[in-house]
Image (tube, rainbow, N blue to C red; front, top):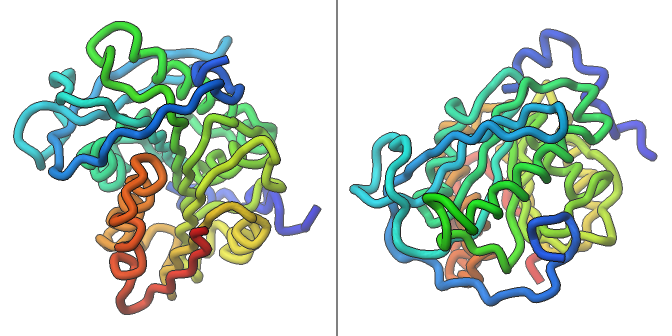
Length: 293
């Protein structure tokens, strides 16, 4: 195993402080449903809080979703869900952050037609390293899919096509861990942001994976994310923000545009979104690489 793996354990305290039988189980679904057509117009966004647990571990989760109402603006608590059936795309925040501090990407996904569970964790480096945090996200995914059976989101969640996962920094490591050391076979799409390599790709997962990273990141090593990318044989892409830091791309609209394109292609089969990727990622100080087939 490369020395670049698990490098986050060596982060200084200062560096860490800057880090912001069915699909209901982790087994492969027996029958894969065809995706719905991708939405053609944006949605308003609603949010509901769920105080879930995994054993004694708290997994408080804010579930964002397409809602009725006028698109744009902040998520509306307990808003009525929009008409439609939507895939699940999890987002896990970074160290010391929260879902509310990550709305620039969560809102973009939810308004594009995704149910976005966003757990609020008190991140612990040891739990990321030993897989507990990745397993927590798997539990959050299971609980989110179960919302399709009863309650306000019943009938609005696509439980038959697989799920997507994304996350930044420690959340990106948790996301990569779900593809490698603690695999969740339900995952068909992933977007690790500013992550480090958490292990070898699992033979039990078949996912399309988009990495996003600044190549001057002083908190999580760009070279480690590159190693993770190079190890993958799945359809994959890497968006580099040249000269970018750990979080500098948050304010760059190419970031949410590219992530949403990726999610629409991989979860809805939207080939137009796939074909937009190079252009939507292009511009000064970016580098786009992909192996999409």
